[in-house]
Amino acid sequence: MKGQKTKVTIKLFGVYRSITGKNKLVIKFKDAVPLKEAIKEMVKEIPELKRTIIDPYLEDPRSNTLILVNEREISVLDGLETMLEEGDEVVFIPILHTG
View 1 (spheres, rainbow, N blue to C red):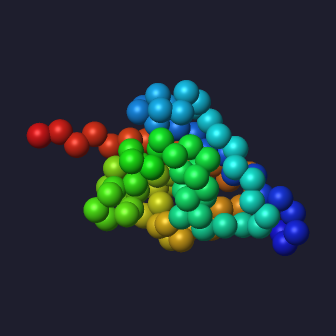
View 2: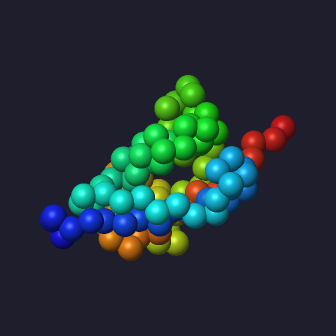
View 3: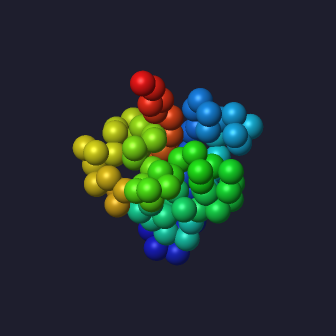
């Protein structure tokens, strides 16, 4: 797949949808990329998402968000190192922490 554009669809739910005003984003890369790079790109394009998605202490999105790649939770894949390829779909669902 080298040399081709890789398009990844990102679906947003809950507060992420409210922040962006969108339920879906499409991000393009030169080649396949790890999920963590897609998250960095998404936060770069929409900086308002950073404080909501990325835990400020852990610098990690997993404590705030259920993340699915092609309908599979990333913990059963390679976590943030899961490689995204052409046509993949990533879903971000916020986790509510209440007490």
